[in-house]
Length: 183
Image 1 (cartoon, rainbow, N blue to C red):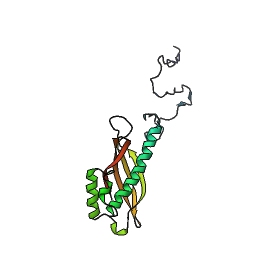
Image 2 (tube, rainbow, N blue to C red; image 1 turned 30 degrees about the vertical axis):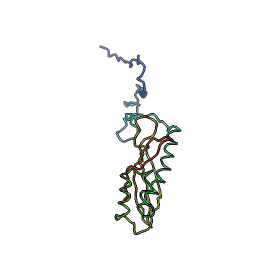
Image 3 (cartoon, rainbow, N blue to C red; image 1 turned 135 degrees about the vertical axis):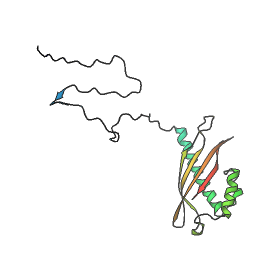
Image 4 (spheres, rainbow, N blue to C red; image 1 turned 120 degrees about the vertical axis):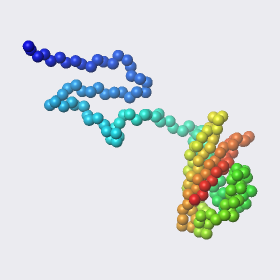
């Protein structure tokens, strides 16, 4: 009996790939010295895994960028004013337009309580960052933002975190401080 070698080639794909699927590479069928020419299988931590889901890169719209800039400006100003209340340089009642009623009471209480580092000097805001935290149900692009940053007293640096909520009025959104954390 003669031995006959039969080579079977892979069948071509008859259907188009799924929408959003990554293209697959065909494995080489040529063998050299008994080894396949394909590259080794990527490991779980090699950074070459193709199993990661891909997300489309979407930049912020111009309206979102304006809202973020406005929120950052308001956050910076509100934090400065609130720290002035805590340092007893401004009455808490003067901030009723930018603080929720609960925050007015909290700022008043902080002005009489022991605040970290008050003996080091007045509080000076150093950095302020904002990040979107949610959307208003009407979809107008305004909602809550988380505020975080640093302030200093003397040579020491402290952390501050807050939350601003956009409330609609006749002239546009009015940002109101609804929570505050000093440490």
